[in-house]
Structures are given as C-alpha cells and as structure tokens.
Image (tube, rainbow, N blue to C red; front, side, top):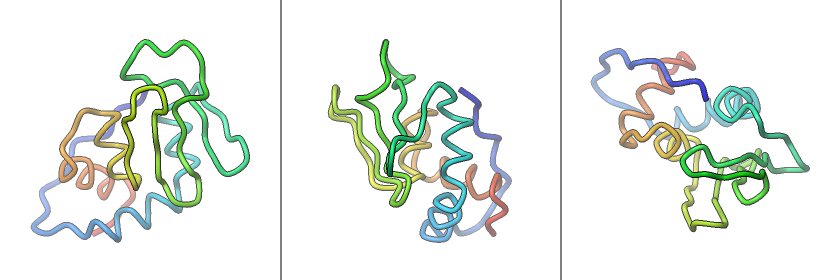
Length: 106
C-alpha cells in the first residue's frame, strides 16, 4: 500500500474541495492505495490492509460517492478523506492535508 506524502503547511483546509478533488481521482487513488483490488460495477472491492483479510469482497468503496465500509468489522466512512485517514492511521485533518498536497488543492 503506497503511503500518502507528508503535507506542506497550510493555514485552512477546505475538506469539501479536497474530497471533490479526490472523488475525481478516486479510481487512481484506490489502485495506488489498494493495489490488489478491482472495480466491480460502482464499487471497488479490495482486501482491508488494516487486518488479516485473505479475500477481497468485504471491504468496498463506492466509486461515485467515496463512501466505504468493511462489512466484516463495521469500519466505515463517508468520503475519500476518511478512507485515507483509516488506511494510513491518520487524523482526518492530516489525511486531508496530505490529499490536498497530492492533488494540488490549495
């Protein structure tokens, strides 16, 4: 799983703008973060890298909305920032800053 780059200093963060930019790039982000996954209709199915998940299927991300869930554990979130925070064990703010830097959102 590819890590997010360290964030640059930024005074205020527009979470909506970061999530909108991440949604536009979501298939590429997921391919980078969850390289063993695959698109299946409107969802991306992968193994959850935060647990000993052997088979893809219970961890899914909606490609249109960014909502995600691990149906085996109950972990879930509503957007790409929360997914990045979960996958990389970051706070929401740190995940948003790193995504903003990666996607060129100011």
